[in-house]
Structures are given as structure tokens and as C-alpha cells.
Amino acid sequence: MKILGISLGRLNGNNDCMCKEALMGAGEMGAEVEFIHLFDLNIQHCTGCNACSAKAFSGKGNKCVINDDFEWLVDKMYDADGIIFAVPIFCEGGPGLFHTIMDRFGPRMDKATCLIGEKTAPGSIDPRYISNKICVSYISFGGSEWITRVQADCFIQSMTPQWKIIDNKFYDHSLNIMGDDTKIAEIHQVGVNMYHACKDPDHASYQSEPGVCPHCHGREFYFAENGDVVCNQCGIAGRMEITENGPRFVYDEEKQVPIAHDVLSGKFAHMEDIGRMLGAQMEFKKTDTYKTRLKKYKDFISASKPER
Image 1 (cartoon, rainbow, N blue to C red):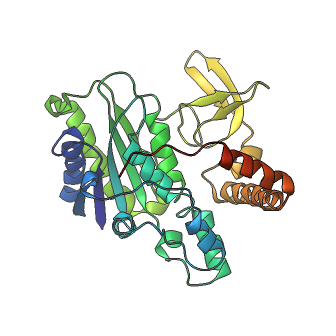
Image 2 (cartoon, rainbow, N blue to C red):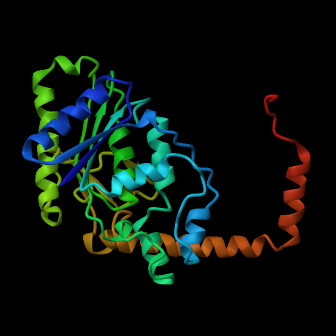
Image 3 (tube, rainbow, N blue to C red):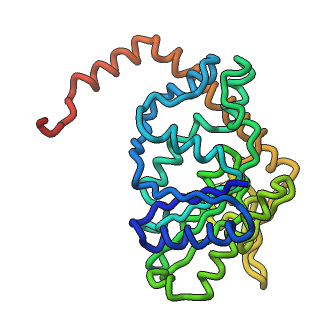
């Protein structure tokens, strides 16, 4: 069993150290462990070129065209049975580099994209991207109470490849966490939990404090004008009830779960929606209206750049 720890914090800072604490927990149970400090890698931003998904849908694999260390990182991730991220909290959510990892994963590593690519050309997609049973945990650290978006950011990262979340923990006011024996013990347990999850991933379950959404444990919701309440993580729509035990999110499970963002049927529904929009866009680009308007905007102003 291989457990990979990935830290996005300062060198030898709280994130590095607490990621290693979780790895110690997994290692003491018998797992092989490996640690990556993500800032040691050259990871470029996604440009949105869509080459990865275009290649997948045309049966040409799904490799990214950017030449950096991301392929090395992907191989490390998919060679592991479990992954533990240590994530610093920037302005309530994950930092820019974490969002870059999210962007580089999707749509390329999306399970639905990979399945479509493999169906189009058998053998064109790395089988690890389709058949893996990777478990993942996130431990996030903030300096104050500004921590409310980070769990959703972490969920979205796992949603694309359909990894199973075991822990999604956050710690506010945590600058001195290395002096808190109770919290260190909790983080050590994250590694133990990961070991047990990877032994039987099919039956592994969420180990952190339950959230408000029964489906994905989300705590963020969008209140629509029509009265619907939508979970910002899984996209399930329902209503919110306030009870003496706290908020209760209620929804039609039979209708909503099949179109949730983190289930395969929901991903395929999303792909069909995107496909319709791309088809309409391709037709629009053939029109004189599009060509005239594009020329107008291109001719109006050029982008400013620093001198090189």
C-alpha cells in the first residue's frame, strides 16, 4: 500500500509538518509513504486550450500539451492508493496553486471524459485514470476564522477524478498548531484512517464531521430566486429546514442524486450539456455576425505587455 502526502505550504512550515504527521500515522500502520512539497515542482497554469479533452474525444489520449512537472505529479498520484493533501487557507479557500491543480485535472482527468475517450479508441487512455480506487484526504490550515470555502475547494478537486474522500478537515486559528497535542493527534488519525480506507476502498466511508448536505457533506449552499437551495459542492437542489438540531437539507433523492456532479450519470449529463453548447458555438462561428463582431473587438484595442 502506498500513501502519498502533498503539501502546498511553506517549506518546513505547518502544512509540511502536519502532512508528515498524517503520513506517520499511515506509516506506523504499515503503509509505504512518500512526501511531495508542491512548490519544488514547476506547475504551470491551465490555459483553457481544451487540447486534452479534444484529444480524448477523438481517440488520441488525453495528455496535456504543457511541458512542466505536472505529468510527473499525475503519475505519482495514480501510483498511490491514497493521497493526503495539506492545504493552507488563503482568503477562506485553497491557494492559487491548489486551484491550478484543480484546473489541470479538469476536464482531462474527469472520469466521464476518460471513459468516453477509452470507448472512442480502446487503449488510448491510461487505465489508471478509469479503474483506480484512490482515497483522498484534505487537511486545511487557516490563521483566523476565514475558512468557510476551503472544504468546497477540496471537494471539487476530488470530484473530477472521482476519488473517495475519507477526511476533509480544516483548522482555524491554527498558526500554533504544532503546539497543540490534541490537534496533532487528530491529524495523526487522518493517516490511520487513510490506511484503513485503502485496505478496503469499496467499503471505505467519510470519517470527518458530517456536513449539512447528506450526499456530499457540503456546508455551502446557493439560495436561488425560485426558492431552491443548491449545494455548492454536488449541485443537488432541495430546500433547507431549520430544526432545533440545526439546518437540515432535504431533497428528492430519486431525482437529484442521478444528476449530482460527483456521480458518473451526473458527469455524463454535464458532458451532454457541454456538447450541445459546443455544437451551437461551432455553428455560430460560421456566421457573418460572429466574424464581424470578432473583428470589431480585435481591432478595438491590443493587450498591454511589459517590454522583454
